[in-house]
Image (cartoon, rainbow, N blue to C red):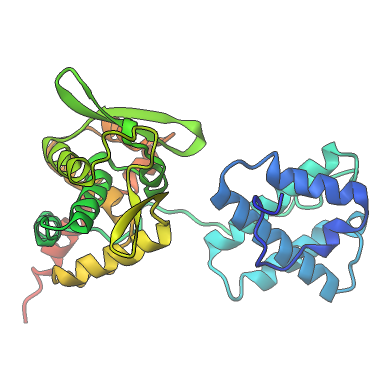
Length: 314
């Protein structure tokens, strides 16, 4: 259990009053929430709510009322963004629903509490222009194994719109040949498996990396491996290390935009749509449930806005 839940956050004492409550609480995070990122975020929300209740003299979950949840959210909103407040409310609602099923509560005190309104029509993820993307890929040295790995990893995210988690989860056998073309198999959120042909440049990047790293004889091993003491080791590269690598590579390419792992997803979708691609196909490639979500990554309007602003002349 300890490997499934965060150990560096405040324990939610409010929900651990007795053995039955504690068991139901841990089952909520370990058995009910499979995604580690969601689990981490919701566990943090439970810990913050528990700490707030204890500070205000609320020591039993049965005594929690809607007014308490509303007061907590109001205080939370002073230092956190609206999306964060909405996420915390969603976490507490789900947790209380789980406790109701376990017969620990008669009703959900968070069900009637309304969170802040928040509507997003344009994503905030920094994107790269076509020229910047080319400069980034061309700036990576290809006479080193580390450079080949980094170019293949960045290329994968840019050409397939893959989330960094799906890239890290790839095994060598998830890049394969079908119909004389290279294909990639991505294990995305929600247990989705997304298979698609590789762009010819991505195919070139992956072939060069796999050949140089001699990964062909280890089909079940991780594709993108950690770098230790000058060699690749048989363990997936850490997402945090990928983020630092991207920042370093961008700096070396002379790119000032503070990009991250998700920037390649937004950059790829924008570039695809800009070149005549269809939104519904981009949605399928990105493994989005809704085309509205895919539309948040479409940043073609940025260029239109800039052109209009430049009409102002003094």
